[in-house]
Length: 135
Image (cartoon, rainbow, N blue to C red; front, side, top):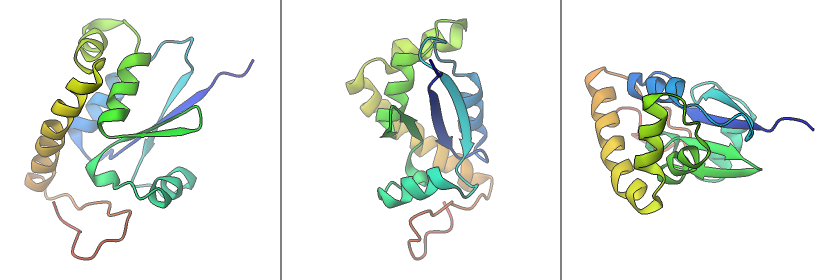
């Protein structure tokens, strides 16, 4: 049986996002996690854009043919995460609750956006919104 490929789409230019995505591990029994830089064009970014999901405001996990966005993505990752290492155990404890994920994720997103503004990064702007280039 083929191992399911689970896609994690995020902004690799964000140091916090990149660190999180490189540290998160999923259980081997679930599948293989593939990290995708949202700044690179491709079929998954076309799918995300077609769904109207603003990648500048949330990461996306594609699993089982379904897209999980923002707090739902981080919650889904927690549910399939491995228990290897302190980071993954902590990630599970915090984000296993959908309610808590929905409360914490906007705070994390605000911090991320502030960090990218300080670093002078531009937005991905996958939805092509006018005057939406800077954080």
